[in-house]
Length: 408
Image 1 (cartoon, rainbow, N blue to C red):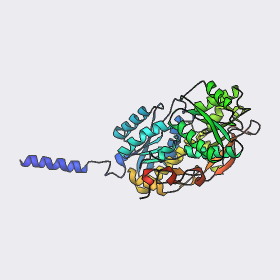
Image 2 (cartoon, rainbow, N blue to C red):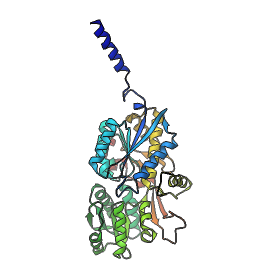
Image 3 (cartoon, one colour):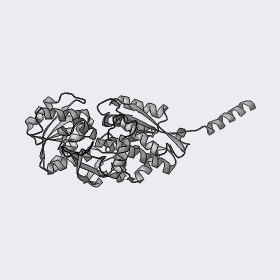
Image 4 (tube, rainbow, N blue to C red):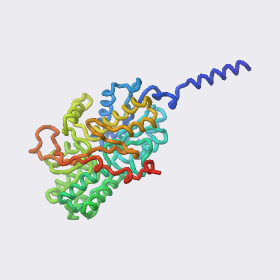
């Protein structure tokens, strides 16, 4: 009997001494970042391997360690499918020791992963998605929406184009949650600014033929065709609009356009287009210094300049690592509280603040694509028309209606 008691006592002592996620300042003795992105699809140029590179640069610049423990980066391709995204995230959290999932690229995959992360008390850090519901009715305690959202895009481009005389709109919209949200947000801004919406047509994601949609937009007589889509869909819309002769008669408004899109199109096709962005590599000395490091990195095989998704991801991960360092743990609650309590000051965000709804509010920029004659060197693509202050660029906490941020 005494022998049994001794064995039981040893077992209890061993159990008490065993490491646990809750007890360790740094869980599993490693801070692991999972980059869940589109590696092969129509968002791969604006995120993909460039997003992985941006995260690895942030880790390298941090010295590869935080709170005395190593930082590791893993990545996966969600193929723009919500089920693959959520299953990958769950496996990462349950088996892979992943502390934070970042990027996600599109709204559908983001909103599939967010509840999984909230259930597991892990952080999601979104740079690519745009839907306002992410920090509105779908907000979670462990999510940060970092780079931009549809409200910022709609207000930046929609409001300024109406002011410039583009007071009648027709939308060509990607038929999924992001596109519908962007159309709704922009239509509201157009109407509030004194313009009118003459109609809209929706297309499947990853379309190749936009002829019927463009003909409907052309027939509407609208002064502005608002493209509520992204990536390859936007590129194909613009190319085919030029082929159909739409652009000389009507103005295209790119509601979510990336510098990678402009590079693919060429200035002769994209010239004159207005768009809203969170980042431009040639803005000042700080942006140029970081962007050239990114462009010349050995892992950047295409030698492309960073998109706002990639630049935002570097900034976001650095902000996360600074929070882990400050609180001395990778436990989600204290880390995300520190991230929300600390302003962001770097090349990407000057005095940006993360609100109780999880939305990072910072300055945005309305830009116009240069003509070939105006461009003086490679990637010299944008004229900055206006800096949009954070208070104007993003909705208020109250307007977002995140249940977590409601005052009681």
